[in-house]
Image (cartoon, one colour):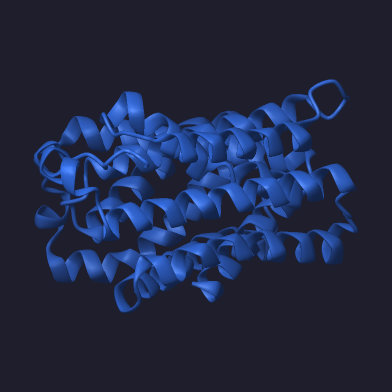
Length: 294
């Protein structure tokens, strides 16, 4: 998980550097093409028809649209904001997921988790500082990307029975197609070294996905998921080494609140999953919902 998150952050840092030179559609198209080249042997081995077969085409379409929007918003935000700032705002995504699971999935969230969500969003406000100049296009794009990422995670829950390769293929094709459609209007001739780096983006992202998925297969989620927050450490390090960015105290304090609240929400959900309330366990299980906090 730690190595996977470090690769994700490295991928984001490379994307931030490249997006200062090349338009977002071009990055999406070339990155996706490189990913498809790596996925091609797996697709051929599993059978293209089998990989692409689905009984939930609308759900896949919604997920792909959300992913296209999220990736585009992320690259637009890192174009104008330090990488650590954007990653800090993205750390609020698990809080969005918990809050949105109530109206979208019919799940129940108790008082303790609502308090943690409120604390986390207070941390987001500390990072954004809406009364200052920082609340510009970049900050709004990062916040929109975090929210869209949360919606994408929720949409993935409705596809939990779909194979991992199918999900990867659909999202890679969707993001690549969106970039390819818009690319002619934003084409910038790349140098050969830069073209290679654009391709490496897709390879690094695939390796990161594989490592994270592997960690979840060999270890309980309660053990490895909290390590996702190490991506913030990598973002701070890379931002300082490459761009000389040093977060101020507001961003550091906001990041601490966001991470702490996210870890509490995750820990609380693990507690409820391990020891559900006996009086409501049957009802919650029959409805596929979490028991309320006690």
